[in-house]
Length: 76
Image 1 (cartoon, rainbow, N blue to C red):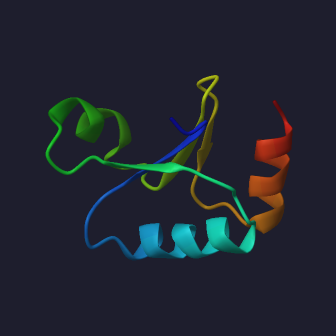
Image 2 (cartoon, helix red, strand yellow):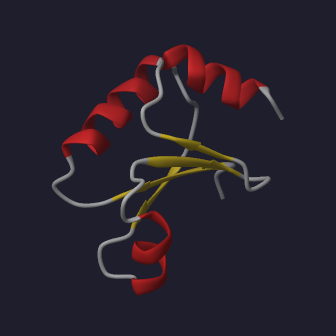
């Protein structure tokens, strides 16, 4: 199980941008959590996606950049 989860939805331009940022930041491993068909996740993240969540529950909301991701990953 990954320490990081990216909450996203299908056909989301911002989610595509977030994936590119995570790749550029060389985030080693993360799980993707699709919110589209989950009412609870939609209520929690619908207006916020993409959101990167760390295993300790801390969340990084979009917009984020490479430096922000690296700081978030290193701030454990």
